[in-house]
Image (cartoon, rainbow, N blue to C red; front, side):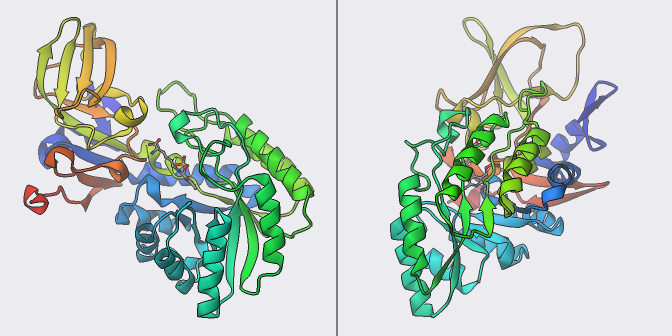
Length: 404
Ligand code: LLP
């Protein structure tokens, strides 16, 4: 996004023009950004040639999935719906891994019938369930076990997944027991050790600790794993102050780890692929005075973008028309929903805004639409994808009639 003559543009399109044309709120994606992000990941990890399985939960729009498939990525799915969508987008079953603590019988059956690459199991009970179904289907099934490495990802507590108090994976003792159990299994092949310690991780250090734990546990067993699935979690620069993860350092740690061990690495990135690829274009409905600040009431709300309400997450809000030398307003940007958590951010020294102006909420490509709801019977926004000089509508605005 850049300002041209003080007007905000995205990939050459005037944002206010898009706002007028498609009516707000609008999720507007840049295909170029998605491709650049994928290219960046591939480039940084080129030497180890990982299998990159896009975490569908970050954004499951079918057209986005199709574009990601065109870049030869696989998928990490966590439900029957996500698995079906990944397949529908054309992603090859042998590039799909299935994560999650509570896979149901129906989900496991479907995954087995589609011959996906790996079901990453997270408990003994789940392994028994997979084994039972494999036996009925008389099929050999490749699985992974997700280890809980008890590593602090140093991210928001709500999106940490690798600490001992978290529900994910199995502890080291059970991990070793399960390896022994699986040695005798006729139907299950243990191929992968998987981990995922959390999301929006901004330093390579937690990954370094995680790799040490993996290294240690691998030394305690002579089982020959084929894959090590390191999960996703690579953080992005929401604050626009260059605070994103240094992938070169992460790569170095993995390279060191692989010197002692020879495995195919799997990644499950979500946010780092789509996070900064989209903006939410919104319009100011009203501006009203509070006690100490003015409330800017937007036509986008917490049902469209949950992250601020749910995690206190920060998304920059920028004007579509820059005004210079007039930055003296204290604003709180809020949605129209009847909840006090329906607030996006409070900003000091902001330029003076006017009712009916368009604004942009930045970096909403990951966990934006995928977490959106119809709370307050609000229809979900339109989604558009900029592809070079063309715009594709990749999801129509819901009609209120669909919600009746
Ligand atoms: N793999 C597994 C097993 C996961 O649970 C997740 C995310 C990922 C991969 C992808 O992580 P990423 O690369 O996107 O960080 N709704 C929250 C994020 C929840 C993440 C859940 N798991 C948010 O809006 O920040």
